[in-house]
Image (cartoon, rainbow, N blue to C red):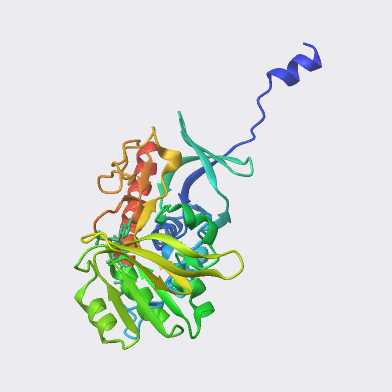
Length: 322
Ligand code: NAP
């Protein structure tokens, strides 16, 4: 046989096979990693573009058991990562761009061209902040329009800001922003808040907060130099449009699940949330935990809980292959 032919026919073992890959290192991902690492599966955790997930963008977490004084979101998730590393979990940063079912398991391809194969996969890719989708939004992204009060709040010391949304996030961010801003106005599209009573009470008790009901932002105002200087707000009941002056707009209008690469492979609802049964997806060996599959609870503690369930299911699945 000629050398050329030998080289042509040889398949190089370019892709390594993992026991379990965990996509996403939010609280669901790190909890799955702790469990799978303690089971000596040496899980590989791939952190996506939002390192640490939503908790890394939040401040006080007061409802996670074990922290009577509360705990900072980034600290909670970072300590979870260290805990997983102590038992042998490995963490890398990359962005998965494709998902393929192969006979031995799953093959993933990443933005840098890397390919990995795994016998079991745990998806904890979470959900990313939703934007209003206005034409003027693109112009002001990062120049007055933000989806992260924790990240950008300090820029608004002594200024007036607006928050859009009526859930717990909107209340939490509004209260947080009063540390910096002189006035924080929530704009909500209905006449009733979705947020829990305790968060509403904290919001209404704060002298720096205000609320505009039944209204939607229809346009951001400002220019290249100054950034945002105000918003046009439409009352959805009367149709009246008014201008509200502000220097910053924070969007807290929910999230979109990060499931793009699984479309056509994994069952999902019309919003793109993965459909699971006890964390199992429709493909054997593929599990999901955390917000990527949770349309109902979406709490740090439930994300951690479902991450644990996914890890235990993955471990049982791997045992069944032996
Ligand atoms: P959410 O509960 O889904 O609330 C989103 C809010 O944005 C709703 O009030 C919704 O209005 C509004 N909204 C959605 N799309 C909109 C649009 N296009 N234009 C204007 N408004 C829009 O989301 P979240 O506040 O991020 O909370 C998510 C989960 O995390 C919840 O389970 C929450 O309890 C939890 N969380 C808990 C805490 C805490 O306990 N400390 C803190 C943050 C979040 P409608 O009400 O009219 O639908």
